[in-house]
Length: 94
Image (tube, rainbow, N blue to C red; front, side, top):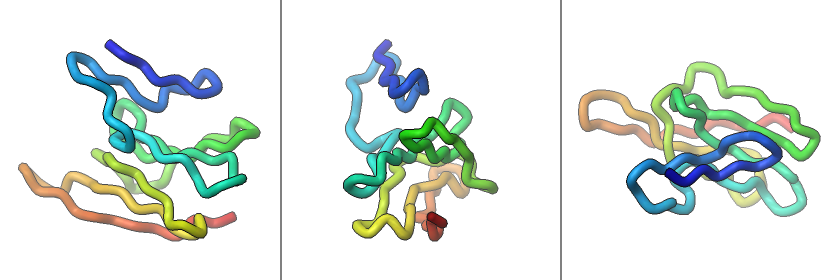
Protein backbone atom coordinates (compact mmCIF):
# COMPACT_ATOMS: atom_id res chain seq x y z
CA UNK A 1 0.00 0.00 0.00
CA UNK A 2 1.21 3.47 -0.88
CA UNK A 3 -0.24 6.56 0.83
CA UNK A 4 0.27 10.11 -0.37
CA UNK A 5 0.01 12.58 2.52
CA UNK A 6 0.11 16.39 2.49
CA UNK A 7 0.05 18.34 5.78
CA UNK A 8 -1.28 15.26 7.60
CA UNK A 9 -4.11 14.87 5.07
CA UNK A 10 -4.33 11.70 2.94
CA UNK A 11 -4.70 12.81 -0.68
CA UNK A 12 -4.16 9.41 -2.25
CA UNK A 13 -3.98 5.74 -1.35
CA UNK A 14 -3.10 2.91 -3.68
CA UNK A 15 -3.49 -0.73 -2.65
CA UNK A 16 -2.04 -3.32 -4.98
CA UNK A 17 -1.52 -0.71 -7.69
CA UNK A 18 1.10 1.81 -8.68
CA UNK A 19 0.34 5.44 -7.83
CA UNK A 20 -1.25 7.23 -10.75
CA UNK A 21 -0.76 10.99 -11.07
CA UNK A 22 -4.05 12.90 -11.14
CA UNK A 23 -6.31 10.02 -10.16
CA UNK A 24 -7.15 11.27 -6.65
CA UNK A 25 -5.73 14.80 -6.45
CA UNK A 26 -4.91 17.91 -8.43
CA UNK A 27 -2.71 20.85 -7.45
CA UNK A 28 -4.40 24.23 -7.64
CA UNK A 29 -3.26 27.04 -9.91
CA UNK A 30 0.22 28.43 -9.44
CA UNK A 31 0.71 30.34 -6.16
CA UNK A 32 -2.77 29.37 -4.89
CA UNK A 33 -1.47 26.83 -2.39
CA UNK A 34 -4.65 24.81 -3.00
CA UNK A 35 -5.25 21.17 -3.78
CA UNK A 36 -8.41 19.28 -4.70
CA UNK A 37 -8.59 15.61 -3.76
CA UNK A 38 -11.05 12.79 -3.28
CA UNK A 39 -11.33 11.16 0.12
CA UNK A 40 -11.89 7.46 0.80
CA UNK A 41 -15.65 7.88 0.38
CA UNK A 42 -15.23 9.53 -3.04
CA UNK A 43 -16.16 13.01 -1.80
CA UNK A 44 -14.39 15.92 -3.48
CA UNK A 45 -12.42 18.01 -0.98
CA UNK A 46 -10.66 21.37 -1.24
CA UNK A 47 -7.63 22.04 0.97
CA UNK A 48 -5.51 25.19 1.18
CA UNK A 49 -2.14 26.03 2.66
CA UNK A 50 -3.79 27.44 5.80
CA UNK A 51 -5.22 23.92 6.32
CA UNK A 52 -8.80 24.99 5.62
CA UNK A 53 -10.65 21.98 4.29
CA UNK A 54 -14.15 21.77 2.85
CA UNK A 55 -16.10 19.32 0.78
CA UNK A 56 -17.92 20.11 -2.44
CA UNK A 57 -21.55 19.39 -1.60
CA UNK A 58 -23.44 16.77 -3.55
CA UNK A 59 -20.33 15.05 -4.91
CA UNK A 60 -19.78 11.33 -4.42
CA UNK A 61 -17.81 8.65 -6.27
CA UNK A 62 -15.49 11.29 -7.78
CA UNK A 63 -12.10 10.72 -9.41
CA UNK A 64 -9.69 12.70 -11.59
CA UNK A 65 -10.15 16.21 -10.13
CA UNK A 66 -8.68 18.97 -12.32
CA UNK A 67 -8.51 22.78 -12.06
CA UNK A 68 -9.03 25.23 -14.89
CA UNK A 69 -5.88 27.21 -15.73
CA UNK A 70 -7.18 30.34 -14.00
CA UNK A 71 -8.48 28.46 -10.95
CA UNK A 72 -12.08 29.60 -11.46
CA UNK A 73 -13.48 26.10 -12.12
CA UNK A 74 -12.92 22.57 -10.94
CA UNK A 75 -13.81 19.50 -13.02
CA UNK A 76 -13.99 15.84 -12.05
CA UNK A 77 -15.34 12.52 -13.26
CA UNK A 78 -18.24 11.14 -11.22
CA UNK A 79 -19.84 7.73 -11.32
CA UNK A 80 -23.37 8.10 -12.68
CA UNK A 81 -24.43 4.48 -13.00
CA UNK A 82 -23.15 0.98 -13.40
CA UNK A 83 -20.06 1.35 -15.59
CA UNK A 84 -21.14 4.91 -16.46
CA UNK A 85 -19.36 8.15 -15.60
CA UNK A 86 -20.08 11.83 -16.19
CA UNK A 87 -17.72 14.76 -16.55
CA UNK A 88 -18.84 17.41 -14.05
CA UNK A 89 -17.56 20.91 -13.30
CA UNK A 90 -18.32 23.67 -10.83
CA UNK A 91 -17.18 27.26 -10.28
CA UNK A 92 -14.73 27.83 -7.42
CA UNK A 93 -15.35 30.77 -5.12
CA UNK A 94 -12.29 32.61 -3.93
